[in-house]
Amino acid sequence: MACTNNAMRALFLLVLFCIVHGEKEESKGIDAKASRPGGSFDITKLGASGNGKTDSTKAVQEAWASACGDTGKQTILIPKGDFLVGQLNFTGPCKGDVTIHVDGNLLATMDLSQYKEHGNWIEILRVDNLVITGKGNLDGLGPAVWSKNSCAKKYDCKILPNSLVMDFVNNEEVSGVTLLNSKFFHMKFAREMYQCKDMLIKDVTVTALGDSPNTDGIHMGDSSGITITNTVISVSDDCISFSPGTSKVNITGVTYGSGHGISIGSLGRYKDEKDDTNINVKDCTLKKTTFGVRIKAYEDAASVLTVSKIHYENIKMEDSANPIFIDMKYCPNKLCTANDASKVTVKDVTFKNITGTSSTPEAVSLLCSAKIPCTGVTMDDINVEYSGTNNKTMAICTNAKGSTKGCLKELACF
Image (cartoon, rainbow, N blue to C red; front, top):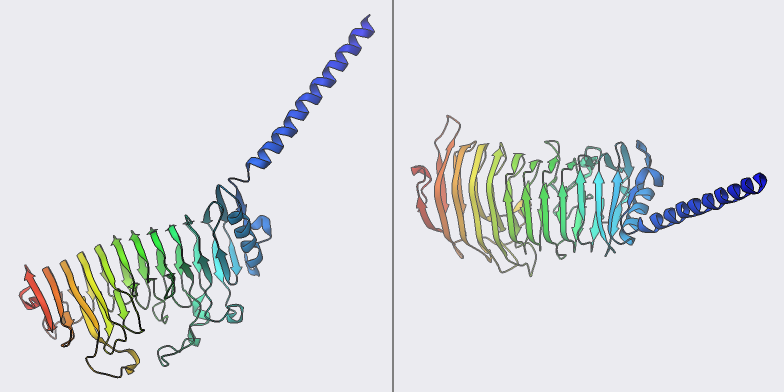
């Protein structure tokens, strides 16, 4: 009887073990299936090496293919380390929402042969709801190739790779990361035809060495619904620039440490360009920039277009050159074929509470076209003084019409 009881007890324990073990295995299967609608892809687990020398392009592209191909919320993790990569193409549409979390440093290869002609380093195409965030760096390693940039001497120069370019991208956020020493532009929304909508850039740092050529900070064109806030930009060209077709832009709390300031344009270089409208810049500081807030159009512009509803407010200049500048006679490389032949209309532009110091005597320059004068220019509370001692603060205003209120008397154009 005792033997029978022991046998029954052993059989019961065996059955119980099988049931529990089976439930665990089933649970694992369920978890594995459930991980697909929301997963994480660490590039080091896909073969990437953070030693700064090994090519990790394949691992990063594999992570993108997996994340973009899965439903739900997917994360690509760039952990701490230095990851050397070549040209990256993040193409959608994706089945879910992808976040690229950058804790480490992505380094752009210095081998220009790895970039297709007119290629970019990181190109994002047809992706919605993308987030790029973290405290890491996107390092273009530009100093190694800047000497190959001939754009200052040759108008139709060979363009070096831009760092981060987005085409047909909607509802994207870029936050926290640093873009460093791009070979050409650091961040670009759309090539000349491709549209981006509803983009947020916040808490981003964009930095390039002072002698870097054409290292524009953030450039946008043919795009709308762009917000840039709490960002620091120090480059050697336009800090933020707007090509034709830009609208509904809000820029707040940005500090510009060097570069050419905030530029609308250049405009009119190509045929069939679209209007720029509804651009608002507020609560910004410009430190020792070559220009402050600027609108520039080719003197022999090929397009008929309009710049309107532009608003600059609460802008502090700290020894910046040319703080307020409208230039309808823009002509780089001296290649313009006609004088005062611009077809660009500038109207309804407001400068409000612009204060600080200028490193040039000309604190205000409104150089508009006699053929198409600037109209509706409002200047309220403009108090920027020349910081030097060899001249006096002045304004140069030609072919501009508008109103002045509360301005330094030397800057009262109207």
